[in-house]
Length: 251
Image 1: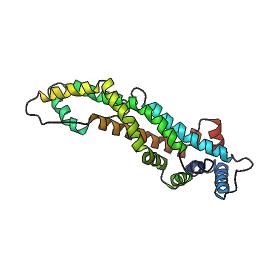
Image 2: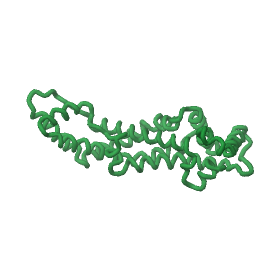
Image 3: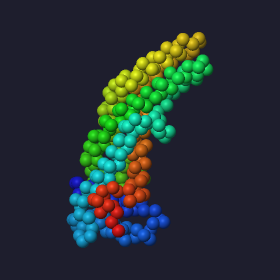
Image 4: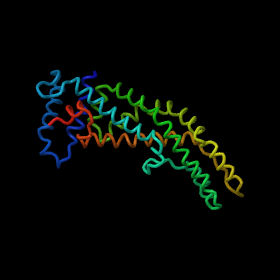
């Protein structure tokens, strides 16, 4: 099963070459197509200059592993969420009224502090995703691989979302809960709500900080997994090891 799992990711690279590179990459494309034809025909390992089945399988797993670990490493660092406009976690929708009301009386700093701490909690919980991605990659079946190849540009990302979301929620939930407390988000929330409730004639407001941070953290992770996948599909030079260059970048 392992040796067949690599067919699709090679295909993702082979057939995603931009038209402007068609002439320069023609021999590389022909070689990749030959590998796929050989494997699909069930004739065993490629011969000659073609990478072996084992090498293709290893490179397939390696490409996904590198991409997912890059994302987890980036988002799990300080300001991985907070300083990134694309995935910065805002206050829950329920607290937007609170934010506006406190801003009118010059008390917006406590709300800004709470928003920062929500992002810090997501950054603290993200590294938990690393082992789950690696396990999902390991468990990919040949059928999964074929679906990825036949699917759209983010098909690998969709595979991860479908396979990992329940486990990722389960693993990250206690980390998010703990992180919210450790970074002071719960205390900041209590401060904000205390200030808000002290204002006259304000409606009652409640927010689920844990659920909000957990969902936004997962959204941010998969957002960048999709970016990594698109880069791998469209940029063969993105490979960073000798094995990946041999399999995906051979000319």
